[in-house]
Length: 290
Image: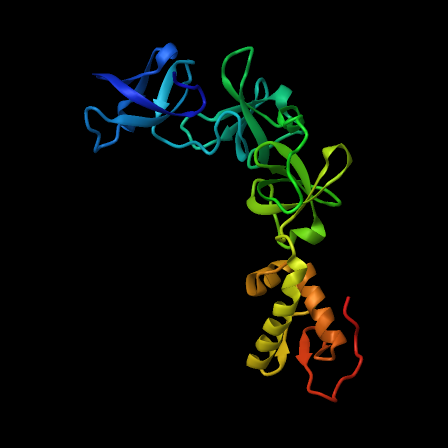
């Protein structure tokens, strides 16, 4: 049986002037309009299609791939707002996705990006979006353990950091000092479970487990970079985290630990901005590492 709002592998039943009719099981025959029929189609081929409702609420199929399916979270752009029904979102299909006013969590304008969950409205049977995310997150206790790798969808920014949706299921918090990158709502990143607190609250990080073990090899990497660059680098503990990640592939916290280690061993001094490689005997305290 075909599933509304999802990708389906369906069999061709017959051909007609409007296009191909596909076997939707209990949903009946579903039209794939002619403009979506693959050019290299063979008579007995099965088709991978997305099933949704057209502007007249008729079941149709498309070979286009939407940005999100029913049961998933995604960040979508507002393309229009109808003051009577709600906002319409671009989800990659010809017919825009409705975010009804009752499912808004704040006022929206054209051009805004909003994080939503996609569902089938139980009252109308239509595919709609909801920005009231808490209703659609799992209420089951998280089964993660610290160190687990997870896929994250970045949500709203808070004074502490970023809310993130974990594996399309639970909410977690990615603290600013563990983000190490400038993040945007809707961005997908790989992260790790740092800790699970009382009530199932999940603390996240972008650093893999045992990131502190990177410090010894990182200190040598910094020394090598200094030597190749004439003894000076324009990196220090005030360098933006995204630059550190681009060059050294570590978080800013890990980089600062490595700088602190080198400073305490009298291998570098801080030149503000940047650092300088020291030779034995020419250490001067200067500014301390943060």
